[in-house]
Amino acid sequence: AQSVAQPEDQVNVAEGNPLTVKCTYSVSGNPYLFWYVQYPNRGLQFLLKYITGDNLVKGSYGFEAEFNKSQTSFHLKKPSALVSDSALYFCAVRDYEGGKLIFGQGTELSVKP
Amino acid sequence: DGGITQSPKYLFRKEGQNVTLSCEQNLNHDAMYWYRQDPGQGLRLIYYSQIVNDFQKGDIAEGYSVSREKKESFPLTVTSAQKNPTAFYLCASSLESGGPSYEQYFGPGTRLTVT
Image (cartoon, rainbow over all chains, first blue to last red; front, side, top):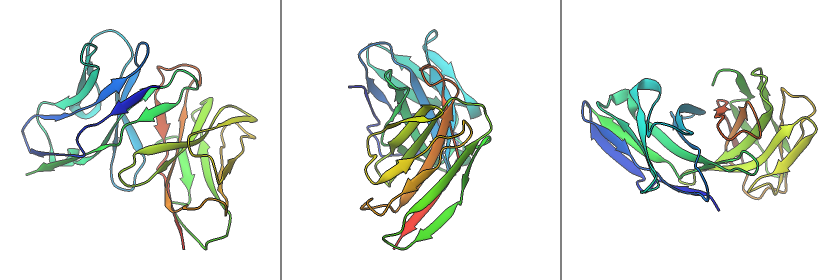
């Protein structure tokens, strides 16, 4: 079965510092990986995805993610964090059978001034 | 959230009552999904539909029902059989049901409280 794990419930970063939100996956074939962000009491917003090609994927709001096949990871990164980046971040992997997205538990990112 | 509307934003019901959550999309997407979100548990799939008049159970379908009579609409009914219905409900859609590369777009959610 395909699965995705986010090992950190919370990540704390100072404004201006780089941030990383970790995600690892388990799939039987080529993975289709996604990152979403959720602000309080809102729906999820799509940030970026990896389908094929370059291992470094660039997305919205200055975020990027690095796909590492050998480590089965897809970590979300940003060179300089903003207080407004504080939110809940979800990693997801696509299930081939029905197009279902399988989500990680989420990581709460807190960026302090 | 653009293109997918969910109503109402907040919903309060008494235990034992059925309640229907609305989800409409104007993105011309084929597939639609319902998720339930509880604190610390991520998102769990309730039902999904790849085409009109067809839908499949997700991981936690018990106590829920859906219909897909129109491409744009995918209402979710939370029945009295759902033992713990209080949660945040999210609707989503994607362009092509069988294509794994397409991302899902989410509505703003409905927070249901049952007392």
